Image (spheres, one colour):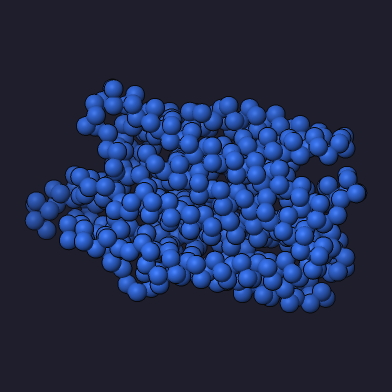
Length: 483
């Protein structure tokens, strides 16, 4: 290797692998094309929570037809949750290495097949119900991690909050639409119709991805200007590769496969994952228990009306997510203005995925979270008290909606995780799934843990820049050693 080449590699950190084209936009996709891609992955992302929640209103019916206790039927929910946490570790990491589009299609195909099996499962085969629910979780869960990776591929930090907020609408609408549709289908056509509906819906989603979704992984298509192989190209190229720009662009070097578990070596990432997992546990504790608790406390409800009870929390999370995306971009612009006033406009690389070690990205993402946290904790504790005292049904539903609005506190932490681990968006989101899906349930206890864990966010703000700098220096040393 010549000295000039060695100098070029040793002075450019690998996490800034795209630095060679900092003079050009991070992605060649137009704003409309980016929104189209985010809409597609948001649609696919709805199936992870949708598949889980459409099942809830039918739990009382399943206990009867399978002749099993509510605890055993709820065990299928728990196993779904476990696989929902573990499977993205494989598929997400594979997507960071081999591409988003094929893994998206594979996951939806597996989900479609599992729904066929669940629709046909005999009522004397509880074990098969359990196995197929695990397979269903394996297919559906990874879509959220894959979508997060796509956003990391095409969006710079200055626009990532808005994209992630909109993207979260799909996953957040699942808890609202799933139980309503599941309750109506279970009441009108029987519990098997739930899985036939999912089979049709996921099959349609798989076809849409085949037709329209382009590959976005930067190791394959770069900034969108590199024409990939046939399996990475959509059948109907509404968004075609901008090949006219490819002559001026050199694709980033292909990275070696990285074990996603190694991400847990980063203390700032672990603190964010733990905090996010606790908040998600509160959310899942509410959604998973609505059908059984409301059926017991309010016996006048049937499967359909129990399903309607999920609308409050579903639309609350959707509205909160959309609002949080705008707040994230606003906070980023405020911090950007302060940073430019201090360091000068030339120090701010607005079109780069790498903001540098000096930009306080942690503070930019987390500065507004404390307001939502107060509301979340207060309404969460109030909700548990209302159920214990069996007050009028309107009270817990209103508290569900308010609590769901503030549940958008997960958006800033998830967006920050993408910022801190560029190029590993799917893997780090998969780690997020593992942590949040393996934590337990309890209202007051978990809300109390949220209060205790809040200092972690301020530690990330203070210590995060040091960890970023240390990772950057370690990567440079590794690159020098390889040279």
